[in-house]
Image 1 (cartoon, rainbow, N blue to C red):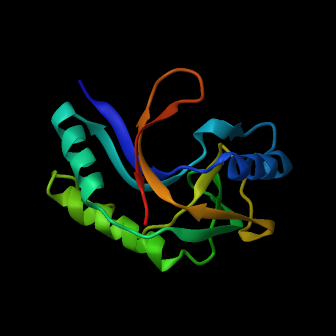
Image 2 (tube, one colour):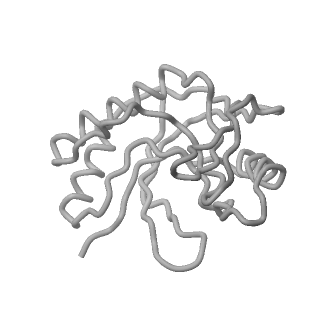
Image 3 (tube, rainbow, N blue to C red):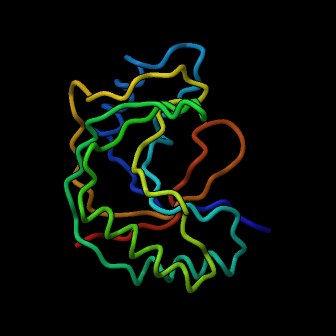
Length: 170
């Protein structure tokens, strides 16, 4: 039996409310909004993982160190082929990129392969969205990132994601 897992940054209530406001302002009715409780920024997607893979991933999370950092979600855009409306940073902080790199290095020992595409941090606001030109967000969303999490994706109605483990950042 497998579980669909990923490491992520999990926003607090203030950031969720701000992202929900952006959704309300930008997402048309024909798009499928991400449930506010499911909003996150994926660090590393693991996919379907067997129990021993989960244990190895959790151990990898324990070994990863990192420092807390300020994240500014200041840009919105759309991946036109996937029809995904997103919000993310125009300039990802080095601490975020270092965290992703550290997770990928530790996870190699578990048999996980890093993503081939360059890392592009974002939170998905909606799917099946109409194309939207990338542009600055009028009111950037500030976020002091002080932890990263391991998340499980479930089936059924939203919210579909549940945090399994949390690791603090120094």
